[in-house]
Amino acid sequence: MSEEAIEFLKKLIRIRSINPPGNEGEVAQAIAELLVKHGLEAKCLELEEGRANLVGWLRGNSTSNRKRTLAVSGHMDVVPAGQIPWRHDPFSADEVDGKIYGRGTVDMKGGLAALVFAMLELKEEGAVLNGDVQLLATAGEEAGAVGSKRLYEAGYMDEVDALLVAEPTGGKIMVANKGVLWVEITTYGKTAHGSLPHAGINAIAHMSSILHALFHEFEMSYEPDPLLGGPTFSVDVIEGGVKTNVVPDRCRIEIDFRTVPSQKHEHILEELQRLIDGVRRSTPDLRAEMRVFNDLPSVRTDPEDPFVRIVQEAVQEVYGEERPLSGVTAYTDCSRLVPPGSKQQPFVIICGADTALAHQPDEYIEVETFLQSIQLYKTIMKKYLS
Image (cartoon, rainbow, N blue to C red; front, side):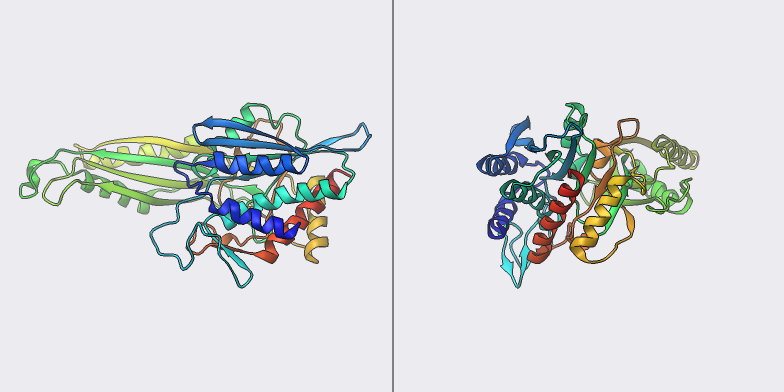
């Protein structure tokens, strides 16, 4: 089925499921039709017009009473292609020198398609499975993991015993991911003619004072995590002003915090508010407000969990070498599917695709890597459901 797998991956890449706005419904429908064509079960779950999650099942065929459910997951949305020109059209799925180019080849339609074809090949081979493989193809991961949240709330994780997520890791075994906290800070001023700046209040100047304090005074308290290290933050968006000769009355920034398990996000927000209050003491007319627009916890699996050992064995068989455990510096759907306080099933994040190529111009996955990922997922499925 290798050629069919390659052509199907190209089909998914050509679907412009860019988030925003998403358009994952077309991806979900393509996967559903493929699963049903090969005798598997599938259900599209609409989120809104043009957007959907997809749940599919490869049912076990063992007569044993000790059955398990292995959930496997990948997201269907991709980030925009960006403003830097590509050598290969980001949605053409060009295959050149053993590489398939396109937005989402790495993050993460390559991993998602590999999960799908691992299920199809096991079905075709008549593999005896002591339990079900449940596919969770999610919408909106790139903007708050909204699809996986909806699946969790609908109970699709209730009967799951372990979770495998096909995010790109370069073949490394990841058993933790950082949390994320996205914060918007807006400053407000008063417009005036640019030739009379003293008659207005410059919102950009006030934001500059906040940024200076943020970069030079702000510190987060935490205990380093052995797999994830320490937290980070980055100011990645700034907007302000309407015209060169108008004093700006509004400026906005977006801050991306990546956190570790020892941190509480409410403490970070309290420290940010204290920082703003400190700036206000030296800038009496400062008006600033803060808004959170993404808040997901850091999650981790016990490295000694039996499911982790099964994945390690499968990696040894497929790649011919042992690979150490590590953690993902980004967030994943795991933060929604196995949140703190839930059943918290063991999870592993792994795909052979090169993490460094995610969100980059001329993103690509090597055909050999893609096909090898199918073999890896088949091996994990068979070992866990044996």
